[in-house]
Length: 450
Image (tube, rainbow, N blue to C red; front, top):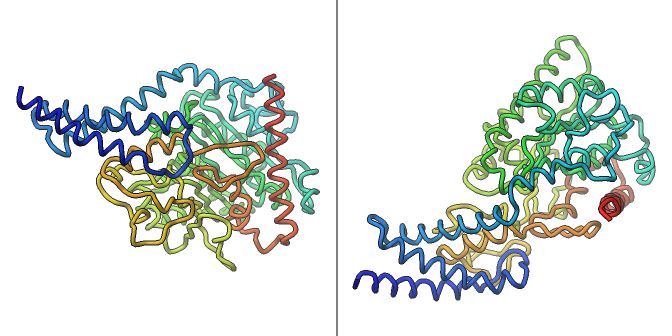
């Protein structure tokens, strides 16, 4: 009994200061109710965890605190899974928006009449990506002559029942469209739900005059934070796609045929799985003849640290377009906001102070000066931050948190090697156009739901 009373006292003693520390600032804005509820919930979770953990043989001190944090973490995931039932999420993401109900007629797109891809199985994100292809009018708006109709290939997880068959289907689409005769082929790794960001593809299509092809093969229908168990499957998908494209390039070289420039792009979990497929960094980029790679908002941790080191000799990392080096010709680009919770979150935040919160060092952009590191608390705060890291309002491009829309136009232009080929006026027109395209797409989607 005395041990239990002592444990309760310890729990209260730890829970109260934990709740107080949890009232400090975070990297992104939370809903008011979450901001109000979080300190009490975290303090209670830590206090209860210490009490319960101390009663379990072998759990004491930090181990008991870790048990409390685990309970809180599992509870958070359980809340989101219960609130949004997995089956319902998958069913919703498998549905195609009403405004895109009809298959495209452009033969250069997957799902069109000559395509082997069943359009009805592309899912919401696949249909949106295919139908977001840029037009001749878009190119004219920024003063670029369009010489080709862009190729967009998308294969959904529902289009075939295995990784190999999905990759084979994607390759057949590329070959059908004579994609290997184009100047560029961009391989985009989608997010867990199948979401493939159209903005960097828009940039490539516009600045290359349409002389390009983009291919994306999905691996699921759930949001990225519910798709972490699929990282290996997703990485294997990227690896098989890279190998298939590489075999085609080798065959073309042997026959003296034109070989396109290969570009890699991945955002968030998409960046992680693409890096998973090329774990040796620069060596693997050489192996697959990669011309350029742009990875945006890569989830943080030791794996990310290691990959950065492997590419250090030929990479550049920027927080925003103003940091793009002049006259640079780097092959690898990392776009990572200083205050992106997805980039900053990592397990060792629970027990170790990160350099970006060192009080003796300058703060990165948008990291609150008042934000301090606290044992366990900072880890929990960043976990909640990741949930609210992306606050997207169509057309309102803000360089905040995990939202990179305001940066992608300029950074993709530099990363893909077009900085020297466009004027400052064209660059400004491109930024305006990207916003207009997003607003028009959002309006179309909104109208289809009304």
